Length: 239
Image 1 (cartoon, rainbow, N blue to C red):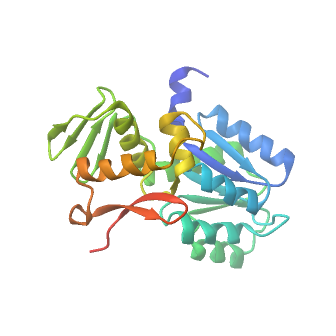
Image 2 (cartoon, one colour; image 1 turned 120 degrees about the vertical axis):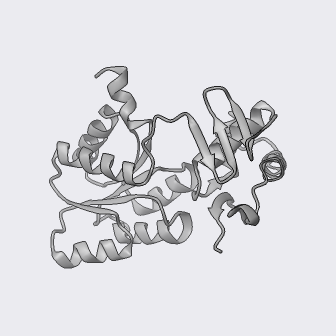
């Protein structure tokens, strides 16, 4: 596979909840070969822990797990993480009632095991496109904010805003992960490259400055919400 082929996945992060070892290895191989980053868990509890520490772009869920069900995981995602995160079920449960229940709970697609490689990858790619995840555009946009990642420039209302390197990296990370809960620990690793031994006031201070410099406030339709004891989430403000 060429570098061009591998870039099709755009390094999207996919969480895989699957307790069957052989099935998990097969799906990880298919997705990794298509350019996706795959994060695997074999329990609902460990999947929730994964999502609390690693923002994902998509989730693929089995139904029957040792400690709970994929529906439990889906409901947790919708309640605590994101209403927009694309979710695909991959399960042996093939009754119409099961499919309807999963879709009503917020799943975006439903595949019956054993999955076929071409169909699985086509479904993932299609949902990625519909969710606006797959793009080669080097611009990141949020309302009145535009980030040019190629030239590392930030514009607010078409006026360039000078930012420090860390403030720029934080802005890219937060805006790219719109709608996802970002823990302080994740931000410390992603932006500062350190574990949680750095004073968390560092993150708080930079988030506060980001709100101010980029004018991210309810009047623009977005806010960076502080989630007590967890972190931050950039989310839309209901009119």
